Image (cartoon, rainbow, N blue to C red; front, side, top):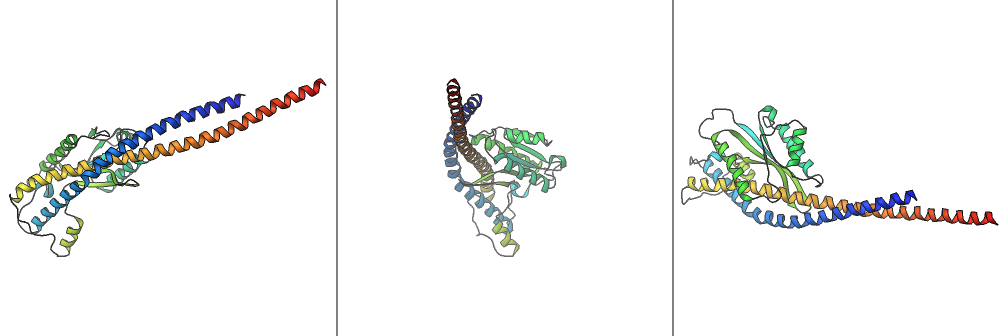
Length: 303
């Protein structure tokens, strides 16, 4: 009797877990739909503006016009102190999202090891977004200069403010570069951890390879208003858009990872419930058989 009672309690506990994971899967699916719409709607504009300003800036610098911008070439004056590289790592605030945080943090640790000066031990700065990443870095003894709270519904004004801080510090010569480690959203079935160089802006790979081979890149532009005014507007907008896109991609990828993890947990709970039900039926049948045997044996003893 004790064994069947124990199995029955386990069946009830597994059923409760299955209901919780199913609810979490539905919530993650709902949040994913909204986040995916936001991320995919802004991606064409972000990529188009970013590629356009990089090509224009590369065309101006290769054409000998003498026009440049601090976000590309760095500060015009020599900084008083040695600028330090900054690495921004974007993780989640909550768990139960499968390998999402682990993949991002492994990529971040590889970046800190392979890039001289990026690690805080070598003078670099590490900023973190998400409590899970902050706990991991603290456990591994990696100091962070700042922790950002973006949440799963990031506001553009918060991202814009963060990007502006990076740009101001870069122009002043306080930091040498800004790299963002995040989970890039490629499709519903594919996400990839990536390290994106936010500052300084670099020309596209195709333009850089063509320039190194001696070929002309892009086309010649005539600017109205002047190129300096356009770059002063377009380059900061491109930096803000790229950082916003990275945050949105990270949010979408987090919801996908949680949705997949909770679906797997729900399916496993269902399988375990069926297996426990079979065990309960077998134990109950054995118990009934034992009781019948005892009754028959007692009746036979009385004869």
